[in-house]
Length: 446
Length: 180
Image (cartoon, rainbow over all chains, first blue to last red; front, side, top):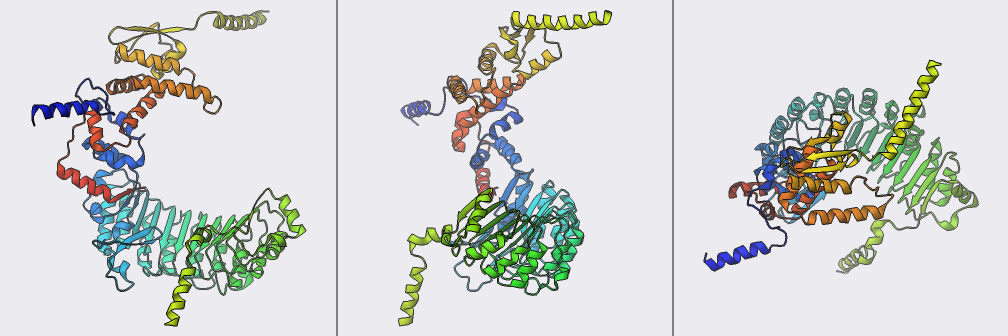
C-alpha cells in the first residue's frame, strides 16, 4: 500500500459517522464484567442475536448462555453436541423441522401448521414425509445427546421418537413439564410414565396427507396411568374410545384443559367426559363428526367443573352427538362456535340444555337464522355478553322485538352477522373461485 | 402526674423535630473521589446511590464518604445526572416533564465518548445507581443496534478471535436455528 493510500484509509476511518474520536485503541469492553456486558446485550432486539454471536468468542458465549428457546433446523447440529455447547441454558426446544432430511435444491415448501419441509420435484407419491423423515434410531440418539447436555429442559417438541428416546430424555431432564410428540403411537406412550413432572402434553397421531400413526386405547391408558399431574392435554388425530378417555378422566385428576382435534375415535366417547372432575375448558376442532351414537342419556353426566366449550372448524351434522356434547357440558358459562358447518336451527336448539351461559360467541356459522338464535338465547337467563360475526343467515331485518330488548339488557354485544369473513372479503378482488369455473367449462367443451 | 409529664415530653420532642426539619437546611453529604476531588451534595441526591443510602440507614454515613473506585471527572458527571433525576416524573401524570428530562438525558450522553460511558457504567454499578446504570447500558446498546459484527468490532476495538473456519461454522449454525 502506498503512503497516499494509507493516508486516505486513515482519513476515511476518521470520517466514519458512527465512531467517536477514540482516546486509545484498547478494547474498553474488557473492563466490563460478564454481568455488566450481559446487561447491555439484554437491551438488544432478538433480531440482532446472530450479529452479536459473530463479534468475538466472549460475546458468542454470553449470547449463547442467554438463549432459552430455540427451533432447530438441522439434526447434525444436535448430534454433534454443538447445540449444547453453544446454548447450554435452553429450556424450550423444538426439533420437529430438524428431524427431516432436506432434499437438495428445492424450491417447493410444504407447510402444515408448525411442520414445514422442502419437497423435491421428483416426489411422485404421497409418502414424501415418510421418505424424508429421519430414522427413529437417529432421533432417539439426538434426544439422548440433547438431554445430557441441556438437563434444564422444560419443553420439547419432537417427531418420530420411540420409547427409548423418551426414557433417556426423562432420565436426564427431570424438570420436563411440556412435551409435544408428533407421529406418536402406543409404543411411544409406553414410556411416558418416566416423565414424572409432565403438566402439558400434545400428541399427534395421524395427519391426513402426511403420515398415519396409531394412538389407541392402549396408548391412552399408558398416558392415563403415567401422567397423573397433567393439567393440559391435546389429542390430535388419535383413535381410541370410551375406555381410553375414561381412563384419562379417572387418573388425571387435575386435568383442566382438553383439546380434541381431528379425532378418529369410536362412537360413544363423549360419555367418558363425565369422568373428568376438574375439566374447565373443552376444545373440539377440525372434527368431521362429533359422536354418531353417544349411548343412553343416563350415562351422560355433567362435567362438574366445566367453564368453557369451544368448537372450531367442525362438522356439526350429527344431532345425537351434539345433544350428548351439550348435555355433558351443560354447566359451561362460555360457549364459542367458530367456522363450523351444519349448525342448523334444529341443532342449535339443543343448546337450550346449557344451564348458565354468560357469554356466547358465534362466528362463521352460515346456516343459523335469527329465529334459531332467538329461541335459544331467550331461554338462557344468565346471558351477559354475546358476539355474532359473519353468520350470513342471521338477518337484521328478522330481529324480533323480544330479541332486541334482550340486546339492550346485555353488558356487551358485538353484532356483525353480515360481515364477510376476513378470508372471503380479501379474496374478492382477486377473482379466485371465478377462474376455476371458467377452466372447467373449457375442458368440458373439448 | 409523672405519666402525663412523660407523655407531654414525648409530644414536645416530636414537635421539636418537626420544627427542626422545617427550619434547618437539608443534610449535606461530602463525597471524595479517588483522586481527591470533593463534592458536597444533598442527602436526597446521595440517596440515589444505594450503597450510600444503606450507609445512611445504618447510621455509618458520617460527614465525608470516600469513593475509592471512581475518579473526580466521572463522579462529577454521575452527580450531575443524579441531581437531575432526584425526582423521576411519572410518565402518565406529567408527560411534559418526562419529555424534558429525556431530552436533557440525550444531550448529556451526546457529549460523552464511549470510554467515558464505560467508566460511568462501572461507577454506577459500584455505587449501585440503578437508574444511571440502565440508561448508560441502553446508550451502549444503541451503538450496537443494527450494526454488523465488523462494525461493532470497529466501534469498540474488539479483537476478532475467530478463525475464518470458525466464523463460517457459526454462520452456518445460525442458519440452522430459529429463535423463539
